[in-house]
Length: 207
Image (cartoon, rainbow, N blue to C red; front, side):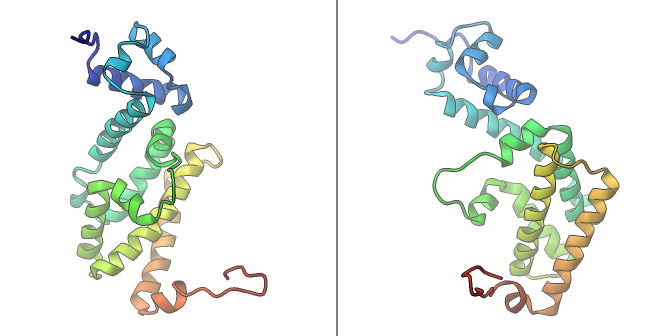
């Protein structure tokens, strides 16, 4: 009979997330995690097969905590902008958590559909809110969401990496400007013609 684990999966996961929050993803090693738990690495690997599994468990817990801030988002107006504001604020206040959720390399090709799937209920809720508040089709809501998520992610990544620092007013203005621009294109009915059919120049680069 295998030895009974000295630690539970939840205990290990919580400590792993705490370690990442304080020192970054790169600090998550079996040795450092065991040190924080007051054990050798052996009890960790009676619960998890490897450190990749530990990291994924910590990421799942992190996402659960990230998602909680949007629990009452439907009561705000404009609700979708608040999602963007909260996401960038999260990157500013919890940079290592933002990196864990949104800045980890994927194996193989990763299209936006996979990214949307990773966002779970937050992404689906945003689509519903866009349809509700702006009277657009589901297809156009997804187009708006994709464009704004890419922009929001860019702001968040710059803040998390300390490349740029934006105050709340600056974030609100920048998100508002980007959203209005995309909404004008969507409402014009010319989305495909303006944004979806780039042509290559003489150097083979899309312009």
